[in-house]
Length: 256
Image 1 (cartoon, rainbow, N blue to C red):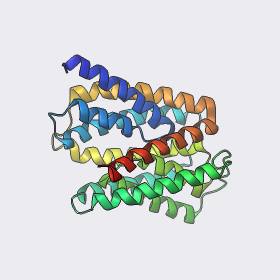
Image 2: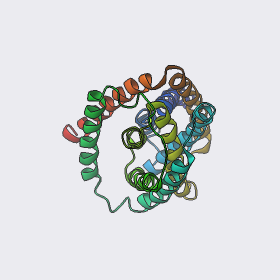
Image 3: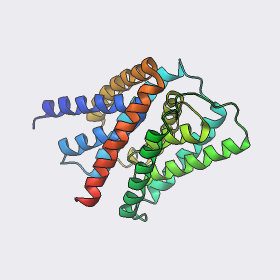
Image 4: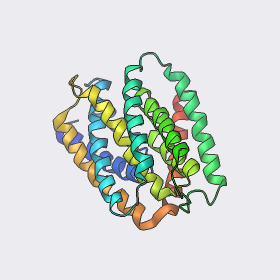
């Protein structure tokens, strides 16, 4: 595969990944396999670093679109972002000590439970019922930020979707507000990862820049669709993504 065809393929999948990520999270499930397939000559660390650079750029783009239209609960989101940043960094440091096979099984069954709960609760995430934020909610946000941040540092797939679900289920957000808030928290996890990858030289800057631009374009379009069609659209998109993620992880676990 020549260089220009590689860039076209990566650009297409980066756009799709950005679109999905802006709406419901999980865009890495599209973009990362494309990077691995088209850049087999590079180490996984370099591919992961290049991917994180692109998704960080895409996330910043979608957040700039969301913030203009969504009221962010900063008193809850900021401590959650800081917690996610710190624990994503710790998770990356601990990656060699955590059994990833065990993590796969845990995440697989959690995804199934999330999908069943979201499907059964038809009104879940349709109405924004959040009223106020006290000490209990802030502490809960810090706890969830630490949990998801550490998971993202160690393993990663579906972290944005877990955040979206937690904001809906535990804080009463609708899917639209939850999606915007999840993107902000993901800024912490992506930034922490890049603190490892950039100093160690594991970023392909030229390829990463092109992938980032395409991811940003997809992210802006994905945020537009989410804002245009609202929480009902995101709920359906979220369920489709969960089914895809469950299927993909199920195949890797049971049919390696």
